[in-house]
Image (cartoon, rainbow, N blue to C red; front, side, top):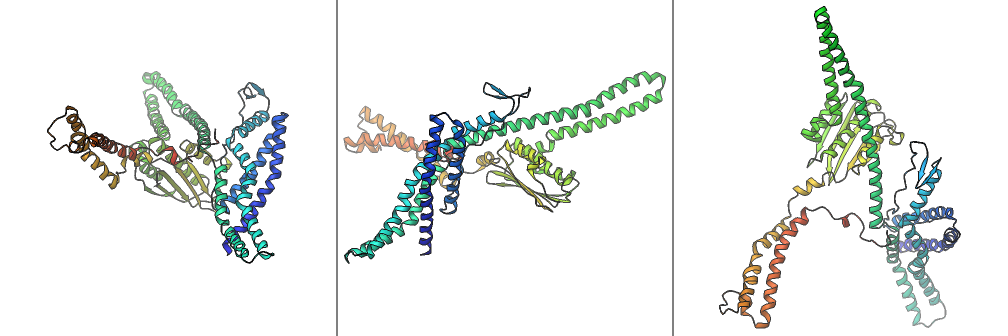
Length: 509
C-alpha cells in the first residue's frame, strides 16, 4: 500500500506542475509573438532560459522520482569573443570596441540554433496534455468511481465501480513509467545533438591543444636561445681568443681550452635535458611504465609506481600521460610539500587510468590557473578527464582517464570467441559442398540434360523441385562463405556509432 500511496502522491504532484505549465505556455506564446511578430529579439533569450529551467527541473524529477535518468541535451555554450591584434572585436562583418555585443549575438544564435531548445518548447506545450492523460485522468476516474459507489447506485453496479477504482490505482505506477518514457523521449539528447556537441568540444580541445603546442614551442625556442645557443656563441668567442693566445701565451690558451671543454659539457647536458623535455628516449624505447619509473628515480620524493597495462598505448597518448604525471610530481614537490607519492597506472576497459596520490598539504585547485589547467588542456586533446581531490591538510589524489587509449590494441589482440570460431570453421570447411557439387556442377548437369544422375541430389527430385533446390544450394554455399568472412571482420572492427549515441535521429538538426 505504501508503494501505491507514494506513486499516487508523485502522480498528483507531477500533474499539478503540468497544469501550472499552462501559464508558462501562455507566457511563451506571448514572448514568441513579440520576438517573431514585432522583431523584439531580446525577449527570446530570457524566455528560452526560463523554459530550460523548467525542463531541467523536470529532468531532475524524472531521474530522482521516476528512476529514469535524462541527460542534458544542450550544445556547449560558445567561447568568449577574442580581440583582434588591433584590440577590436569582430562579429561577422561588424567590428565592436567591447565583446558585449559579439558575445550576446553568439549566445542568441547558440540558443536559437540548438535543437534542444525547440524540443524543450514542444515538451512544454504537450506536457499538460500528457500529464493529464497519464496521471490525472486515472486518479480522477478512481475518485469518481469511489464517490459514485457511495451514492445511490444499484447494488450490482457498486462492486464494479470499486473494482474500477482499484484497477486505476494499481495502474498508477505503470503510468508513471510511461510518463518517464515521455519525458525521456523529448528531453534527452538525439544522436545529432550528441555528435554536434562532441564536434564542438573537439574544436575547443583543438584550439586548446594548438595554444599549448605554441607555448611549448616558445619554451623550447627560449631554452635554446638562453641556454645552449648562448653557450655555443661563448665557446666560439673563446676559441677565437685561444687562436690569438696560442703563440703569445700558451698557458692562458690552455686554460681557456679547459673552460671551452667545460662549456661544451654543460651545453651537451642542457641539450639532453631539452630533448628529454620534448620526448624522453626511455618513453619511446621502453614505454610508459619504465619511463615513469625512471622519472620516479630522478624525483626527490619517495615515489612508488604500480603498472598494470595489458597493451601499450599509442605514442601521443603515452606522451600526454607521461608529462601529466611529471607535472603532478612537480606540483607535489614544489607546492604540496609532499614526502611520499604513489602512482598507479592501469587499464579499465579500453581506458587508461592514472592515479597519483601524495601526502602533501592539499589545497590544489584547477580553477586557480595552476599547472593543473595545463594538464587538463593536454588531456583534452584525447578526450581525457582530470579529477582532483585535495582537501586542506591533504592528501591529494589526482585521477585522469584517457578513454579508448587501449581500444586499438585490445581489439587486435582479442581472440575470436569459441562459438564464433566454430561457426567460421564450419562455414569454411563445408561451404564448398552446397556451392560446387550440389549447386554449380548440378546446375551445369541440369542444363546439358545429362542422363547420369550420379550423386547430384537435386536431379533425383521431381522436375518442379529441381531448380529451386539448385538455387538454394548455391545461395547456401555463398552465404556460408560470406559468414566465414563477415564474422571475423565484424569481430575486429571498431564499435559502431550506434553503440555510443542514441539511435533516435528525429527532431534534430
